[in-house]
Length: 364
Ligand SMILES: *Cc1c(COP(=O)(O)O)cnc(C)c1O
Image (tube, rainbow, N blue to C red):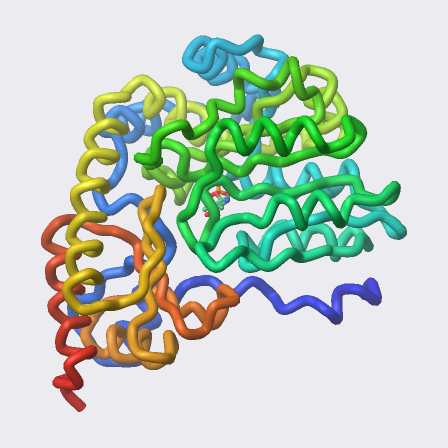
């Protein structure tokens, strides 16, 4: 095993529904731990998969030409500015594979999405982690100050997981202007469709001006296709061609490509999910304000809240009551819980349980 692997903890996923059902002997369990879409996915995606079932023996198109054409028209970017991955996770992985090696370093926030650090360590690089500010935002000035001539990649999670905070357009541009052009900046925009803050940057407008910028997007969150694993990166065609060197030939399955293309066509579904999510956010904000609970205003479909003083205790309490949420302990903020915003009914049921918890009326 590579020496650096012993410094890593394997990814700790949210609890699986079946696992909890067995462990706790519960009939009904709802999982709001991994920011999956509580409203499912577009019916068109299912139809596209059914249509694709007759061609399972054929390798996928490694170039993803159909989907590439669709995404290119949807975003109004040239087709050669796109790269597709087995989830946007794979795009993040490709960036580290292509640019990180022993002796180099990479800069990221803390806490942020755990895969950035993991991939950097696996490639033998140094991960320079910069604590978020007290409002849960990236400390971009501090991140800039850590750049040296061995820095290869800077990871920006916009909006940030797990705090849900986003970076505005002016701040982002001013940051990009100060990053040397030989350093790749990843803007992970897995939740961009949920953003309600004004002045969220459309980074795709900047890929000519900043050829070292790559934005990553996913079909796992608002498009509701997490089970299929498909995402993409958008960057200057030169950066894309560099990443193509490390992309596996058939990395995205036929069914995933077909379903993603159909899901992209259904922007009504996307809009509706974003609207319902904004309403769900309000349910949680009202609850937090009413009870004086600290929370981070969120631009995503999850919310990070400090309920009591141990996220783990809240997690255990919620599981006993049939709801899987995420304790902050595995996310780098042990006092907090991260809850995926669900349907109106799910949110109301969870808030009711949390109210009982904070007023110490919890059963058992
Ligand atoms: C969920 C998530 C992803 C991963 O998405 P996939 O496309 O499913 O791999 C990437 N970044 C962040 C911040 C996420 O929360």
